[in-house]
Length: 277
Image 1 (tube, one colour):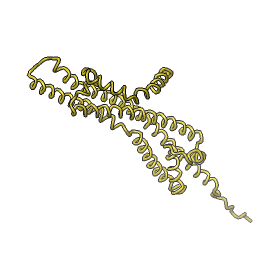
Image 2 (cartoon, rainbow, N blue to C red):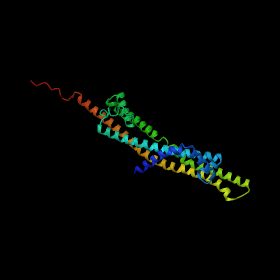
Image 3 (tube, rainbow, N blue to C red):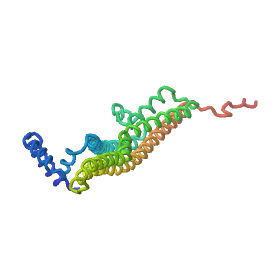
Image 4 (cartoon, helix red, strand yellow):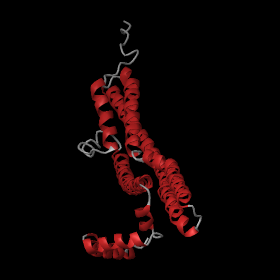
């Protein structure tokens, strides 16, 4: 993706935004123009009923919230996946938890929590041969809880996207029904069916449905993208937890082997029989 056109557009917006946003005269002129032009989006919003205005504002807020959540979650997910990939390789190169202790001593990432949990369980229980299966089981249980917590934290915001994607069209439809109802009431009060009189009310009512679709369609797309990325992140977490458990098991086996080699060997038949006279 080429960033130069995006950066150029963003720079122009940043430079031009203060002149537009903080110029009260320009804002006043836009509002006055909207009052006279009832068929423009701003004019339809200004002429709408207070209920329809509330529906439109809530949908616009939901649409902005959807974009903020999606951009923030995508950036955080990309950062966490890169950090998890780098630390996975660091532990794989180290080959043991003792060698990787300094690498993960002060890091607050998920991989560091798993390594410290395995080390803590090993230090608390001890390294007896009879205790080795229990160490693996308890460390695996704590690592699984760390994986679940990391996946749950990464999924924050997905529920908001699902709610907006499923309810925004119906909220917009409510605003449309309310606006069309007001249009029919105005028709009965004015005793005319002239399209020029009816059209503005119907148009502003349909604008609520349009804003609802604008909020719902990106929410559904972003939710599917987040669900797919979160699924890949869960697979990476499972791989990281499996690597920590394999490394812990290897360390325990090596420690047991070294302890067995350090014990004095007793051989059968080592005591010689007395020599025959």
